[in-house]
Length: 581
Image 1 (cartoon, rainbow, N blue to C red):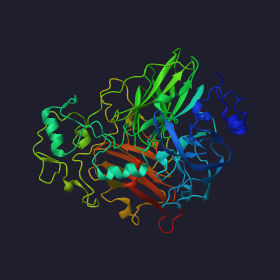
Image 2: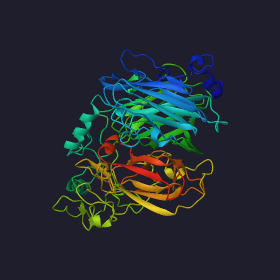
Image 3: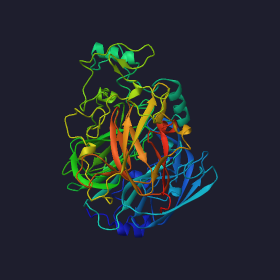
Image 4: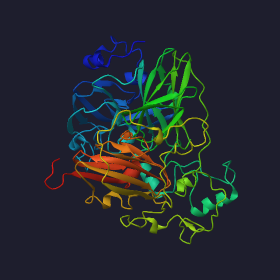
């Protein structure tokens, strides 16, 4: 199999794909196969300097589910943008849908007025309107685009591949995007309303008197006194969602072709609204070569957890095998997305069963000394009269632990007692799976980072919430209360940011317009660069940031209903008096 010549690909555009031998290797999603529904599953491919992307209402069908969707150029996901580092891009967004919309270029370094966030960098593009995006492509790697409105969970998203201006760092024979997402026939407004008025309305894995969860009687009583569930992993899961790979549900039979002996690059993008996925290909090791579009030193794993908005590029070598199952299992293990990596059409590998649902631990309560562990042996004591989470002498609502800038009130129902750095944690439920699982501590940048300076100050931000009332915030203040009080960085300032998660849910935190460097113990100036970081429940994470992109930038949790209910802020990068920027 001849490798794809990317320069010719970009020059010739989609019309000459057949001549390049690409059509035969292209999965059905990329060809935008018509399935008889208004919304086609899969994407077309766009390349070149000028594009038009048209948003429209649609119906979407997968398996036995049918409901409203939003298409861009007629498909879910929308088109794959295949670009070249150094080119210019002009995109005319045409809104033929019934809602306001936008496009955010996730992970791309763009002028802030092109960032596509209604209310921060632009007004929403209303029905019948157009908006022109125009910016240079300054980087290479795997990224994606999406609406920064509630159209995103309905299908308004798509992948971006940017080929490097120079040589590609790795050789491979096939190059596939695997875009993970979750789709529901229930409208996002209805989902958000139900989350606000009921406690965990979509969790069907609750503990009961007859379940088989490995919990002692003392542990069950302790969780009951806290009015919480050890299985409260995801707000919305499989009873409501169908998990999609490139727009295809598990019953749609998505295939990725390979020939024996080939090296296959898989670009995993988590474009889901609310779902973390655990990705594995039973029988195949995966070599991670890039995270959030940035090259890292290769690391071989058997599984990785990918949070919302993250991307991981891996290379697999199927050898002489016939077929392998690509499994994207939801973090709460309520369901999975599936595809086949196959050497012949129609071949199928065994689909592994869903694993047992994971249980939250002491570490997820912020009570860890660095290890995880169950509740066994704890003196749980009695609950407080107000329902606060007191466990003997340990109070889970001790607000005296919070710094003065965190607003204490009904928006906070938990404070992590000992929020240790959890970058070495593989993610909820993956600590004891018995094979190699990626952690942030294994990521090392392939090239030296551009800024050699040490940070001059530390900025600590707490991720806060009240799970029962479905209130989410930074530092106890939801976005509607702080619109005139952004997080301020001086232009070109080097700052270390510490994120402390006072809640029992993992949050994927995304900063627009910048890359930051994880403080993960990587040597020298090889800290991995990312645009999104998962902060584990009850834990902390740190990154170093060079604030060198002037403007106003969104900073938020990428769980869409957390963002829309308050876990959102604006980062303002401005020059100091007399400075330039």
